Image 1 (spheres, helix red, strand yellow):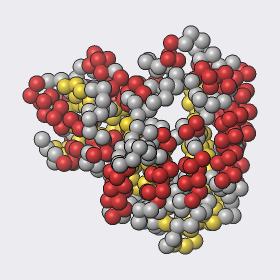
Image 2 (cartoon, one colour; image 1 turned 120 degrees about the horizontal axis):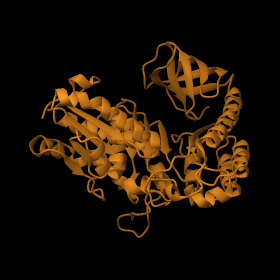
Image 3 (cartoon, one colour; image 1 turned 135 degrees about the vertical axis):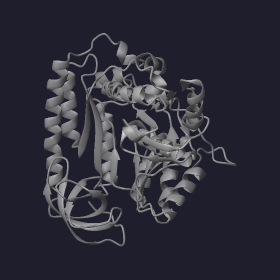
Length: 448
């Protein structure tokens, strides 16, 4: 099998990491990437199942591909990822021109499925367990200086709004030696920043034991080990659960010079009653207490969050609590979502769904509040010097760069992606900063 492939990714960082493995598999077989579906012999749609619009995007894309398939019957259309795992039968009924449906646990068999589809027709593999950890597969890295590194797959929590345990399965951690070997190999190839990935990344190691010991490796141990890899200058991780953000993890972040001063700390709701219905294992006072403890230990840390608006049964009083906690928490940024029921989750069966009009009005209020807070936080950085890592072209012929605290900075000048520089912050907006590069960076100090 040779030719060209087109790969489109929907969803989270875990999907992006999987797509790098899909691309790696195809390229080992001789395929080359293309952005033109007319030139592709294989089209892969790697899907997400977390939000309802993911379904709409998939079937919209499949609809556009149908005429191509009619003109070129040899075109192989593949649906991979979380929707493939969840809706394998529905995909075949709604889009019978799809050739391969491959779930989250079966990526290693993609090439075999493609070959079998040419001989025998439609192929489907949505097994319930991962036999080959995705990180063991070859990868086509999109960046020469940054890499996703998967440390675990699956999740053992049972949040009533979340479909991840259904499509990704229970948590399975990767051996620390394997993770370190991958990070060392990346550093040897010039990667300077790694992002450690897990559905609940800070419970890494709970399902492992240290060889020759009864002790379980902990996420704090992993952070310290990756911090010691020569050549890696920035370490990020996502996504943690607040309940599992233990003292040892905070201490490791404070002590490890390459671990960036940024955490994603999902709130989901400020209402204790709603949090209970969500089966989140904390309440608002405890959440704010954890956040205060982290900020005392790492004073310059930036905090981002997830918030769901319109969870079933959410009253105006409940939503007022979300606004109160958002104001108290002073997040640097928030990913705000309008609740959408996902078949297979417990909350999808709750009877007290909220009308779209009410959800939209609350959502708009929350976004306005958070944008005001984000702007205030960013204005406090104007006039300061920040170490930035150049990412590439941004908007209006400016470069996009990022601080250690994960803030986007638009800067003037010409710099190669993957290089470090000092930037003087000249302006602030809710979602980004303006800056001017004032020098090159040889070292990596803690900064903005």
